[in-house]
Amino acid sequence: MKTLRDPKRKPTHPGEMLREDVLPALNMTQAEFAKRLDVSRLTVSELLLEKRGMSADMAVRVGKLTNTTPESWLRMQYALDLWLLEREPKRYRNIEPIAA
Image (cartoon, rainbow, N blue to C red; front, side, top):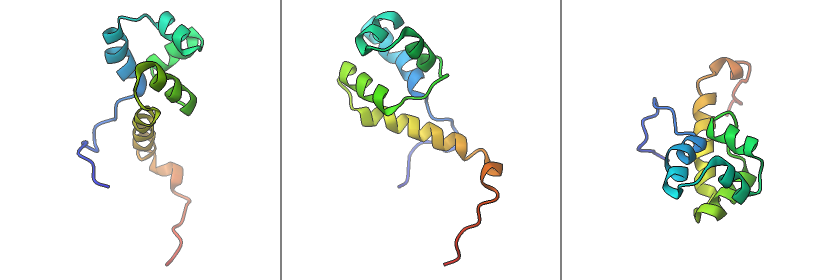
């Protein structure tokens, strides 16, 4: 599937989207966000600071709270994860393709 996104540009971390767009639009603190998600403030802080990825569980929680889909949050994380892994060619250098 072809994408319109520039493949050289690092995809946006879901935590950045929450930190820069969602929380300010909701006029909500990290503490209130954590409470409404029923997770620890540390969990939210690590996500917003991009020290933690968006898990499926968190995507469901965020989706439910913000009236969005969990899939949209997971797609953001998936795009970022793949982009980062594609920049580590040495990690996969010992894997030989199967001959057709």
